Length: 420
Image (tube, rainbow, N blue to C red; front, side, top):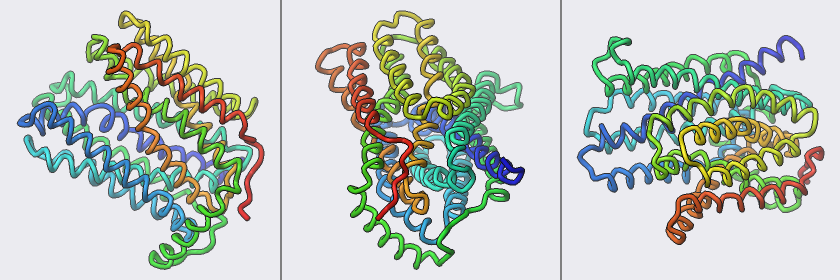
């Protein structure tokens, strides 16, 4: 790996370090709690839950519908990096704006969060696709894993600092916990902006079709998207992978989004759940790096299937949890495979898609990732109501993992598709 290429790879991977602070501190950590207790304290618990759910649902739906179109536009106009930086700028501004939202202004908080979440997801479409511009074909597993690994450690470090700020605001010359949370949002924006700079300076697109204006890019993008949808049925490896990915990543997302709620339903304290989240983040860092090496040595598909098996076993195990130590062990097990399954899914997909339409195809990839947050939680909810047992509800996720592994088995990871 040449010196210039190495600089581009590390610069690209640092963006994961940059934006993962948003997923940990804002999305998973403080925003849901702060929304209920600070911005929406005048609403009932059901009302605040409803509006937070609306914000997440709308953000997911908007980016799911726009991602393939935006990807096609970027591919046609050579705009991947430019559009990634534009979406990132909007996301950073919206995150910083949370600092300014006053107590009780729940509607403003919802709107700011909504635009920030859309921008965050939009930037990821172009960031994921840029991997084909910084990494050679044989480096995809390792480079993708490096990004996820740095993301987990970077997001974990800032989240740990932010948690410390809320526990001991006086150490940071802050008045109280509420002020500490507001400054945490601002710290995420600054962190995100700072570590995006290497991408801006050292990552360059290669092999594009030449730059064109936004209007021309949009026109060409819609035409290209229509053409891709028409030909997708002939790209067997791609659509097989997308089906498999939709199934097993739905299981992964369900575990991530429902773990805290599941832990609370079993009677675990909030402090235990926060500690488990931090444990998962820091274990996921070396595990993601190791997964990249394992993917190169044994093949990404084999490592993904092994990771799916670990997730399935963890779901079965979690149905028997009795104490906090069990939850910590579960968090550690998930941390071992969480980064690897995401990183190798991205690199395996990058390997089989037409390289010249990388952003467009990653638009479909991210679209499915957004839609794959619906069926798992729904299955858990229905199972919980029907059975009357939270422990039984987690077991239904095993079906998603099993189905995803079976479909993935038939994907040839060494065959790159060429669009006719």
